[in-house]
Amino acid sequence: MQHEQIITKLPYKKPFLFVEELLQVDENGVTGTFTFDENLDFYQGHFTDFPITPGVILTECMAQIGLVCLGIFLMNDTLTKNDVISLTSTDIEYLKPVFPNEKVTVVSEKMYFRFGKLKCKVSMQNSRLETVCTGTIAGIINNNNG
Image (cartoon, rainbow, N blue to C red; front, side, top):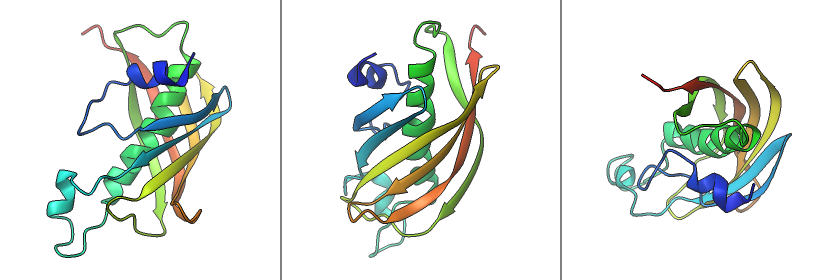
């Protein structure tokens, strides 16, 4: 599966799409990037006069790249339009702020994928190759037939 195909299968659209480019994807992990544009709405109110990216948004970016993109790749042959990858747990440590217009790289390493549950070790680096956050994210593949 091509990297662009994975991105088109994501269940997100702007302004809640936090995947710009996938650099590498295989059965063991994924690496991707996103640039936090200064015009994103949350910067208007998150720390007035000193905007930084909220931790929950950093976690979402890591989940979209590191969990959902990898899940789509791993489930390529069996994924249906009714299947969704739902977040089940996170354990993230925030080390440095991410500012408007910063480009980040997310690296995810599969810990396990069994019985429809995917757990990954994830980290995010800024353009200076500093780790800004790291931890684990897990999710489960659900069939959304109602």
